[in-house]
Length: 108
Image 1 (cartoon, rainbow, N blue to C red):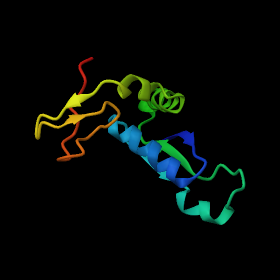
Image 2 (image 1 turned 120 degrees about the horizontal axis):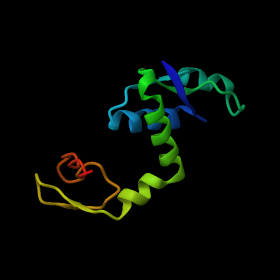
Image 3 (image 1 turned 30 degrees about the vertical axis):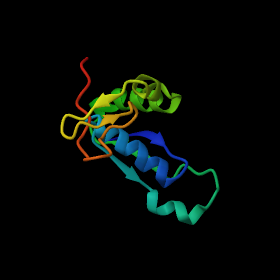
């Protein structure tokens, strides 16, 4: 298991963990329950760890792209059509707000 991201707070850590898991990379948050004890001090307590060391490079690249806004630029303008209910969805959303269906995988 390798630490891939030091978070400023538990919300950021869980957001990053969710990002990784949405791309098939298993991750865990450690230290999130300790953040209340140190307040606003700049301490690296809360971190995201990938459970499979072989996925570290993928996770690191994905997090860097996310933090730079690259993922938002890629998906922000590419709207999609929900195949379940027919709703038109803006590109930044990964699930239909009308029925909850997940966005279909993009062709690569």
